Image 1 (tube, rainbow, N blue to C red):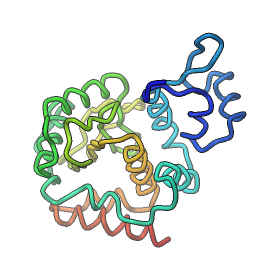
Image 2 (image 1 turned 30 degrees about the vertical axis):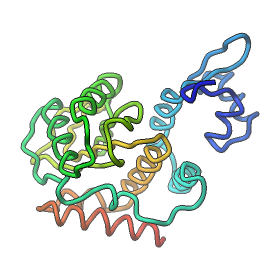
Image 3 (image 1 turned 45 degrees about the horizontal axis):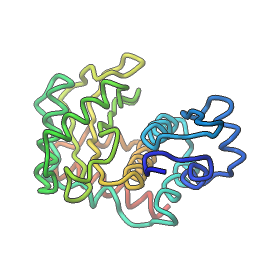
Amino acid sequence: MGSDMMDMEQLAAYLQRDVREVGKLASRGHLPGHKVGGQWRFARAEINQWIETQMPSLTEKELTHLESSAARGGDAEPLLANLLSEASIAVPLAASTRASVLKELVNLAEQSWQVYDPEAILEAVRQREEMMSTALPSGVAIPHPRRPLPAALGESVMAYARTASGIPFGDPQGGLTDLFFLVCCRDDRTHLRVLARLTRLFLRPGFLEELRAAQTPSESWEKIASAEQQLLQA
């Protein structure tokens, strides 16, 4: 079976859940999948997108478990601070439309020297946003490709930007977005770990307000790195 498709047992291992529980979720239509010859088959990209949609409603404990599962065990090392550098941060970002924000985020990611094919990444991110916006009601968005793009990257990389004011970015509730985290990973597990850790940070009281108050790339990186370290020590 190709690596992009999973059967029931493979999905249960991937989600770190009991096979019977996964079977019930699939039968009740809670998991994206389809039957082939009477057997369930699941597309990895669709499962990852399903996991992403669940993250905002998960608790800190559930997010920690998800992150640990994706790391195949405990992981108390900085992740976001290692993927993000001051060079790939813009505060404020001179962009006022979704298209210009995405383009500038990819330009920022290029400053890491890990982006080999910026056009491919930008197109993948655009397509993902057209499928379903990554904007959250909190004014944050996490643009990313739907599938890992290992050929377009040397290493996984992030970029961060804050616009001077909120812009329409597709929040289902109609809110504006001013904080943007571009996530480009070489593999599924790193991708899920990054999203889970970001979501854990968003749950921390005052974190987003501190980011909005940061006036420079250096100060923004320090806020993110410090909050992540506190998260790991909790």
